[in-house]
Length: 145
Ligand SMILES: CC(C)(COP(=O)(O)OP(=O)(O)OC[C@H]1O[C@@H](n2cnc3c(N)ncnc32)[C@H](O)[C@@H]1OP(=O)(O)O)[C@@H](O)C(=O)NCCC(=O)NCCS
Image 1 (cartoon, rainbow, N blue to C red):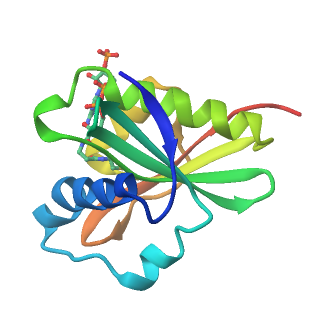
Image 2: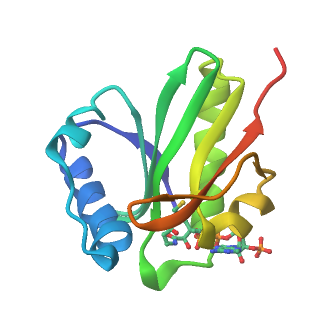
């Protein structure tokens, strides 16, 4: 299963938006905000593929020169639990390390805490509500120097 970085405003990016909508937004009856998408131009966009079909996606957004934030992690409904999410996280962490980021953080949905814990992430703060559902901040140190 190839995992690769994809470019903004491409066919793959359109696939990513569709997948994110299906998995993350539609169940909550929330649409994408155009302004939010425009801000993804400089993000690190990642997709897992089976030939042309996108199986999963996520993105990394710079917080500051030492820290990057994971967003929009989603795997196709019928393919969850097969290791795709963990492989994408591994890929994302390696890119982040290569670019010199020392910490990776995310606003994790409460339902996904166990997934991130298995990959070494720790909850760092209190629960809060975002897009109408409970979240927590989680983080992991990627490199010391
Ligand atoms: C959460 C999600 C990205 C995980 O990806 P995935 O491909 O299903 O996960 P993997 O198969 O790589 O799982 C890796 C490990 O985490 C566990 N895991 C996966 N999802 C989990 C969850 N929601 N809670 C607890 N553990 C979970 C798996 O059982 C597996 O454990 P193992 O190593 O002991 O076998 C995916 O299920 C998904 O898209 N869910 C819906 C959207 C979502 O919640 N996104 C995250 C927003 S913060």
